Amino acid sequence: MGRNRQPEIRERLLDTCTDHALAAGLPDRLEAFAVASGTSSRMLLYHFGTKEALLRAVLRRARDRQRQDFEALLRVRPDEDYLTTLGRAWAGMTGAQGRPYLTMFGRLREDAEQQLWPGFRREATTDWLAPLEDGLRTLGRPELATLVLAVIRGLIMDLDATGDTVRVDRAFADLLASVRPPASG
Image 1 (tube, rainbow, N blue to C red):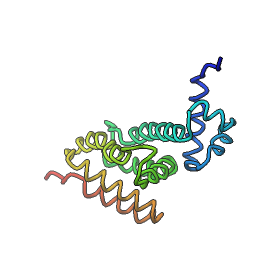
Image 2: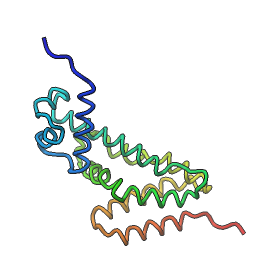
Image 3: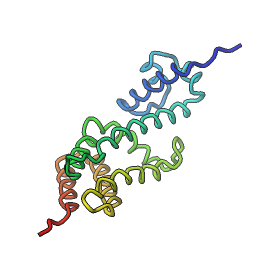
């Protein structure tokens, strides 16, 4: 009779593998995950079934973390102008806190076949619209959420491709200035 699966061990392994993937990227071989988690490739397969199932679980866990982190950055704060919030969110998303997510999911977005996560590009294109609409509503501009999201996504791709933080940050500041509602006079 086989041993009963232990979900707490699986969760610990998944967290460790996710930490490793965010720090070093998705590995081509299970050995990197095995070393990072202090176990064997065989035990990883025991808990996840296949390498692809483990990679999918790691991607989903990382995406859950990213959503939590980025939604916290984009959340409306009653005592703060939403453009200030967006500026801080941009710094968090493109800085040390957010860069591992952008790197991981940027590569996944480039995967034309989307074998590990079918439908990822569609989901990743729309999942930030609601928090942006909520925030931009405080400025009376919720209709700009799609435009702001598209510009943010484009600037992130630009930053990933060029590494030109100064130019891209300046472009983001220009976006914020263009979103500011006209002063009533």
